[in-house]
Length: 166
Image (cartoon, rainbow, N blue to C red; front, side, top):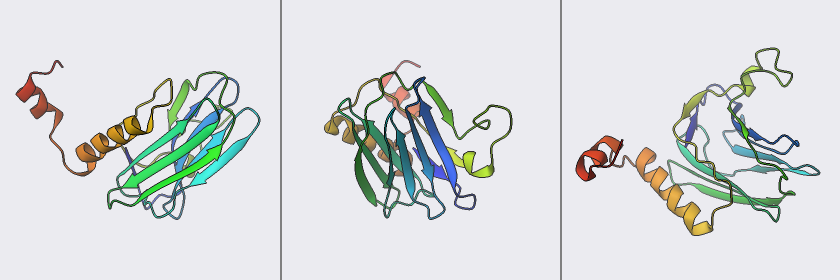
């Protein structure tokens, strides 16, 4: 769940990397499109959303299956949705290094340029060790959208009503 600052585009939202070079990077480009860059050990792909405004509140999902099928789904606050696919060999090791924006340059020695730093709001990140089924993804997307975009009930009110543990 993100909302990039429309006055500071392009911007890098998130990166996940493996020790063997596989990675997923999600950005908002200068045209306000959400972009997923997927890099496997031997191939890469770039999926660019159409009609989804990355500078408004968005729910987006990257699903990378063991068979190499990658799906990038996004929906913005105005209800515009996108789903794009690509094929990139699945990583052979976990994507365990994560960053919101980028804190340093690739060599780790300097502050990265503006487009590599995330500017905006970042509400929630869910990472799973295996790919979810489509109905599970739709359920999560709906819950995130209802809570953050549609003004759903607050967690505090829910805890008070149902006595959920903190």
